[in-house]
Image (cartoon, rainbow, N blue to C red; front, side, top):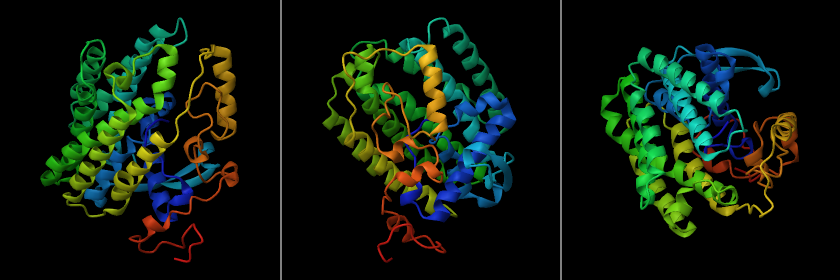
Length: 362
């Protein structure tokens, strides 16, 4: 799973974390129901925000159900957003199309194992077609997303392109997806502000991805927006802070029936993601060696069995704080982590929160 919004259990009040997990698991299961088990690999943390926004505008149009036991939940049942909800179906649609674009980007950068490029392209084509089918069912044209992905790859090959020109396709793709939630929720008046919020969120997501991957991209000779445009980390941070401010203003203009989860994810957690990206820089040595298929497979098993707590040396998350590495903050492996002791910030507006996770006396 990829994405910048990863609220950990330690700094989230219980009800908020459960609500976030309902959308995350709902997205994963909707991908499975729509395109088979393999499509669950397209699940990403940021895609579920689309489902959150749709539900925040019209909760009655986002039915929930009780899902059966899952290994990633410690074989526990859980409340999840049902696949009948158009918001989670839109999130699944966008996730498939953007994951297809990410696969093509990896092939273009030479990240794929030798000989697997054609297979990755075929998988990308299948996911893109599946996303188009799901999108048609809810009145969403994925051609806009596919076009932005292609334009992104084209811009990366053009010399003299500015940083904001490089982030523009991502901004437009997220803007279109966010705005469509207003249509699904029957709140057309929210479309403009949602599109604005989407542009700012897309810019932040693109910049943070570039910041986190810059050293590794340099070691592999892969394209990186910051390096290609000569943008300093200080300038990238300024752009992220400005975008986060604009995102907060756009969010404040929305007419929402339920604001709390959306505001925490797009407000508090976005700022936390910015701090995380610029506060922890991993240096990749000149001896970096691209792992082969055997090493990748063994590392994948080790990462899965430790719930993400162990990461191989070539991983961008190696040496990062546990909140960045762990897949699910509720598992036993996370007991080694110290509490973040910041959940009171999110609990201030959380009615009915069953006790705070920190010992600050609030």
